[in-house]
Image 1 (cartoon, rainbow, N blue to C red):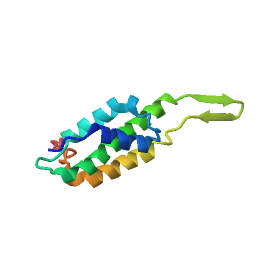
Image 2 (cartoon, one colour; image 1 turned 90 degrees about the vertical axis):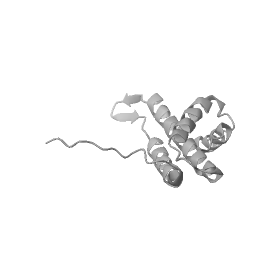
Image 3 (tube, helix red, strand yellow; image 1 turned 90 degrees about the horizontal axis):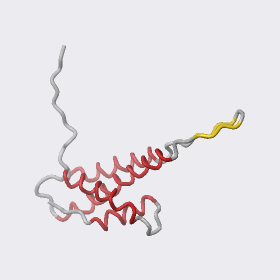
Image 4 (cartoon, rainbow, N blue to C red; image 1 turned 45 degrees about the vertical axis):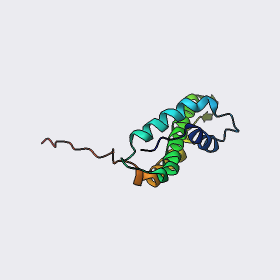
Length: 121
């Protein structure tokens, strides 16, 4: 199993989020994302898994950051016929980035999304 370097995850997150070296407040967000990715890692992965898994953890942290930002900017303003509302402009690209990063890391991740269910008539 590969233990992800949290500093590497934080550095990649900083690039994605456009944080100019001030991503330290988001260390817990990156730690949570790294832990989630590590839990999904396949057994027997070698050091070659480090890069894709680190990128996936950073992308997951960025996606959660985008969701957090969209939740904070949920207000709107109306003046006459003009209405301005905050949107989720960063959420969709962040989700796409997360999906791409998971796809790139898929050789090193267990298939956790598969589910058996009983069909009821």
